[in-house]
Each structure stands twice: as C-alpha cells, then as structure tokens.
Amino acid sequence: MNQVMSTFSTWLSQQIASLPLSMMLILFGLALLISAVGFYRVVYFISIGYAFSIVAMAITVVVLLRQNLTWAAALQNLLLVVWGVRLGIFLVRRELQPAYGKELAEVHARSAGMPLARKAIIWVGVSLLYVIMFTPSLFVLSPAPGATAPAGVGSLVQWLGLLLMAGALLMETLADQQKSAFKARFPAQFCNAGLYRWVRCPNYLGEILFWVGNWLAALLFYATPLRWLLALSGLVCIMLIMLGSTKRLEAQQDARYGKNPAYQRYVRSTPILIPFAPIYTLHNLRVYLG
Image (tube, rainbow, N blue to C red; front, side):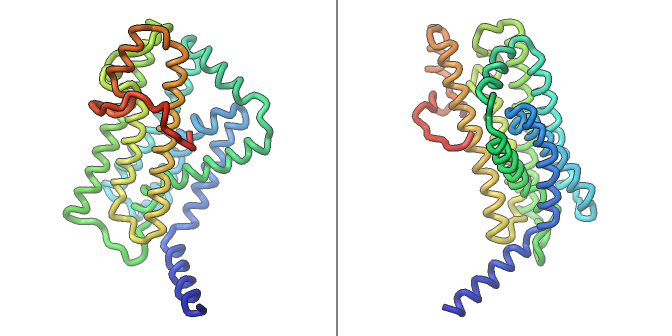
C-alpha cells in the first residue's frame, strides 16, 4: 500500500509540475478583477466580465510568455482578443437598444436582491471557469517539460483549429448583426432572416464552434493527463452552458411568440442549433450549467 501511495504521489507531483501554475494564478487574478463588474449587475459576471476576462488573459500571456510565441500562437490569441472585444462591445451596445429594454429589465429583476455571499460564489466560480476555458491557449505558450513542438500532421491540426475559430467568429458576428438589424426594424417579431433561416440559434452555434476550435488548436500541447483534463473540462463546461442558454432562449421565445402560426411553422422546420440536423427542440434536455 505504501508503495502504491508513493507511486501515486510521485505521479501527481509530476502532473502538477506540468502546469504553469504561476501564470494560472495571474490569469485567475485578472479574471477576478474584471469579473467583479458583476457586483454592479449580476448578469455582468457572465457577459461583460466573460468577454473582457478572455481579452485580458490573451494579452497577458502574449506579453509575459512572448519568448514562446509562434505565428500560430499569436493568431490564436489575436482571435481570442477580437472575439472578446467584439462580444463585449456588442453586449454594451445591445443594452442601449430600446428593443432590448424589456428583456434587460427582466434579467435584472431576476437577480435583484441576490445575497452578497451568492454573488461572491458566482464571481469566484466564473473567474475560475474562464481560466480553465483559456488553458488551451496558455498550454500552447507554456509547453510541458520535454514536449516538442507539433510538426507535420500536428501542425496541420493546430491550423485547422485556428481556421475553425476564425470561421466561428465570423458566424457569431454575422448572426448578432443580422438579429440586431432585424429587431431594429421589427421589434415585435421573431428573427428568421439571414443565418436564422438555417438554424434558430446561429450565434450560440458560433460560440460553441469557436471554443471547439480553440481546444483543437492546442491539441498537440496536452502532454499530460492533467492538462487534458483541464482543457477538456473547459470545453465541456462552455458547451453545456451554451446548451443551457439555447434551452432558456427557446423557452423565452415560445412564451413570446408561441401563439404565432408563422413561429410554429418556423420551429417545426428549422433546427434549433445544428443546421440540417432534425433536432427542433431542447425542451427535454437536462442541462445543469447555463
């Protein structure tokens, strides 16, 4: 038994040593600082705090780990910065739009009176989540001891991940722009224009694909089981969160437009999240995040 415990202790020490713990603590501090905006309005923990935490972390690792910077790593972090800045600006501008006023009031009403202790738990929890989600990019710039840079097929996988990130960012940007423009013209109608003709939540699909691409771009840098666990945990969490967000949006739209025959035809013929897949509702899906 002592031998087993000693072997496990040695293995665990090696796993922990493979992590850039000092950088992770710095990133966690950044996420805490920026996400603290949620104490003003709770929703900011997972909106503005989310977007700009990723921006701050991407800039920080490039500056502090610039000796390990490659063209692929630079592009990965640039995409993360562009994604976060775009999302943050979009969220701020959306709050100023009259068409979003009622929904914004409902969001604030749901979180009004939340105890400070609960806010603190959310604050710490989401900040930790943002660091875990960011670990693929961090691992690219902080290779595990003894790891070699990807070449050949490995390098191709890295660039495929970056291409997926860029395409997903474009999809998410177009979807948000198309819905905002549609709602400005027809505030009382459901959006079924542009990308929304193919799928009911293209912005959420773009979000999922962006983080899948970020994970894929670092695939060859998960040199230890603990790195694999952290990177995969972040990806699974954001996917579950987006599924939960999709389910919640579906319920809100059903309540708002459910009596509209055109809306009923739309939801019966347009997949909710994945184009061409015959999945039209997430009502029966149990999601514990988001």
